[in-house]
Length: 196
Image (cartoon, rainbow, N blue to C red; front, side):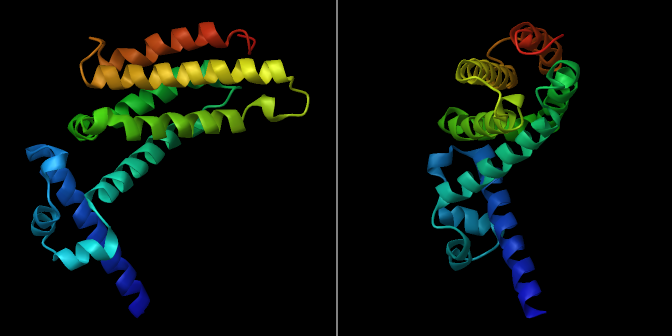
């Protein structure tokens, strides 16, 4: 029983620390936040902070990793077989997910230009699509695999960057329009790999 209580306490402390960091990031730049400020905002002592994290960067990294994994799960329903029929639906889910708390994502993307979270997100999606493709079969040719990997990487990078640019107001494309427009591009690229 004691172990469960310690686990709950540890989870609670980590959540408080993460929440405190995110709250402080709304008020000041990440590189100006101190562990003391996080501890005060989380209502914990510095020792509790160090029991869970070595530094502030580690807290941010854990937040970014969780966000990238959560975002990637949206794409788990997407496979080569249904990329054409379900693409717009899945992209709409991703945009809706971001739209629930756009300021949170803008804050995350403001650190190091969002490179960590964006790269993790792209990598997770690419790995998933490569692992679930028909190119994992023994009948695939090396040229076909290479061509498919290039197409998948191009699509994922372009899709993620378009969503990020839209969220940050860099491309003047409203988030809610992106799924339909990106799907049209994906269909044109993937028509060489799938019968449409």
